[in-house]
Length: 255
Ligand code: NAP
Image 1 (spheres, protein in one colour):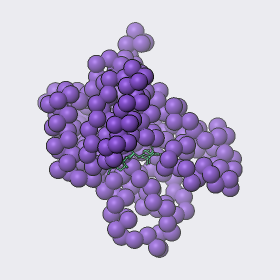
Image 2 (image 1 turned 90 degrees about the horizontal axis):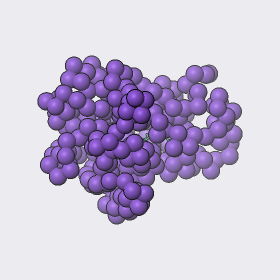
Image 3 (image 1 turned 90 degrees about the vertical axis):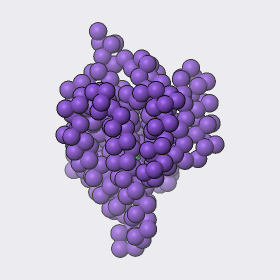
Image 4 (image 1 turned 45 degrees about the horizontal axis):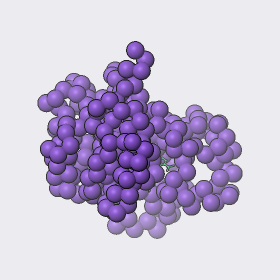
C-alpha cells in the first residue's frame, strides 16, 4: 500500500528546463518512480544528450524542444506531446534563470527576460497543460519556487519578485483548478549545487556564509529534491493543494 502511494507507473510527465540541473534530476527521479518523462529545453543538442544519458539508465524518455517564454511555441509543443506521446499526467514548471545585479543598475530588458522565463512561462505552460487536464478530471502540477519566494538577498530583487509571484500563482492555480481534481503545488529548493549556482559555489565567502546560515550546515545535493517531487506528483499528495514544500535544510525556518 505505501509503495502504491508513490507509484508513478505509466504516468506521463513533462519537466520544463530539464537538459541539466534540477530539471534533469527531477526527470530522473520521476522516471525511477515509473513515469515516462519528456525533457524540454531550447538547446536541442544538450537536450538530446540528456535524453541519451537518461535512457542509458533504463528510463523511457521523449524530448520536446520549445521556448517556454513563447506562448505559441508552448501551445504547439503541448499539442504535439499530447498527440505523439500521450495524455500528460504531471507537469513540472522548472525552467528558470537568475540575473544578479544591483537593482539600481538592472536593465528593463533583463527584468523582462527574467519575468518571462521565471513567471510568464508558468502561466503559459500551466494554462496549456491544464486545458488538457481539466476535461480528464486529473492532473498534477509542480511549480519550482525557491527560498527566494519568501526571502530576499542583495542583487537578486527581480528574481525574488519572480519567485514570490510563482508562489502566489501556484495558490491561484490550485484555487481555480482544484475542483477538477488537479493538485498544484510548489517545490521550493534552498541552495543546491547546479550550473545556475556555479559562481556561488566557487565563492568561498558565500559558501561559508551559507553553511553557517543553514540549520543543516551544508549545500543541498540535487538528489535530495527527488523525494519531495515524487510525493507531489503521486497519489500520496491527493489532498495537498496550493502548498509550497521547501527543501532547504531549514533556511526558511530561521533568521
Ligand atoms: P540550470 O542548471 O541553469 O538549468 C536551467 C534549464 O532550463 C536548462 O535546461 C535550460 O536549457 C532551461 N531553460 C532556460 N530557459 C528556458 C526557456 N526559455 N525555455 C525552455 N527551457 C529553458 O538551472 P537550475 O539551477 O537547475 O534551476 C532550475 C529551477 O530551479 C529554476 O526555476 C531555478 O530558479 C530554481 N531554483 C534553483 C536553485 C539552485 O540552487 N540551483 C535554488 C532554488 C530554485 P536551455 O538554456 O537549453 O533552454
